[in-house]
Length: 431
Image (cartoon, rainbow, N blue to C red):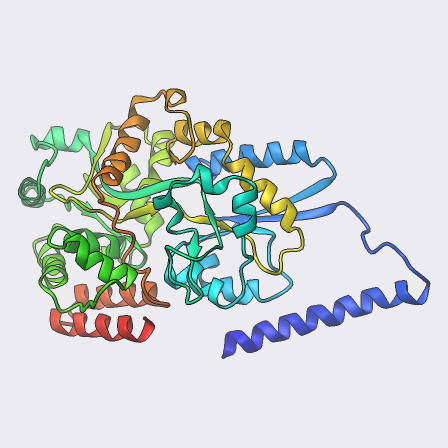
């Protein structure tokens, strides 16, 4: 209720200010309210050196050339900043015109159900977005009246793909005489050898999303498609008290006790995790493709490579985060133009060559062998029905639930049964 009250106050204050501003004009006769160029507000949370950041900067340049009379007001927001304040901001007159936002039931689905996002269905047809994006990629763009992804109206548009993988510092593996893992047994053997040599092998952020991605990878090693569809899409009954998710919880505790994960990881932020890997402090990091372009630009002192999680047929992943147009956007027409530019073949090729996973690029325009390796992993997952979405998607507020619960599990504040019961209650309540 605090958010609603605050949002209402913001809206009332904005309305009052607008009334004061309009009053003189009304008193003096009809005057044009537009005192300068149209301002087009864009928000996203990609780094400037990351693949999406590079591509979208070029998209803004092309947009500006197409609309020279428009002033672009671009703001780079933090992932957590947008995630935590979206409802309040979008329910006020401070809403941007177009914004990157998390796809999924608990995020974009929730906002669409609350009426905070513009319906893009007509634009998707008119502008051909429904032809550019395959049906599987449209899953995260479309939401039912209940906010469940996969069907219904368009409330967002993706323009890249993503998935979770394992990053390896090849130089550290070579120096230790350890081969890059090819299955789960060889992964655990590598973890054990590094730990025995006094090296904490797996850098992990327990304070943000990476810990739940690792937990989900471990569960996926024992899960099947029916279980994941029941969990993510409500296609059947799901309960956390099952062998796959129990195994994952026990394995994370075991890895912490054996020194495969550092105790400091429980409070580590995602950015600090990525920087630690960049600085060559850990040989292994489990995280998403969104780091790939940045690592290509910033890692200069060692060789690195990637693989899908060893032994898994499924991995966390999906089409990328989506561009949404707030219902209160003042320039929806400009927002639609900008989204279309991000799907142009030249922008898509730039995204790919910068280290992203394009959804509408000419494969012949992707030239870097390392990027082909990245795209190859996503292609393999897609071809084998291995895209398992993300563990925080099914229920509103479940991201924070998973973060805090996994921290408690690793700190010994919750046993595995307590951990699973806690998740199960939050999941059922949120669902």
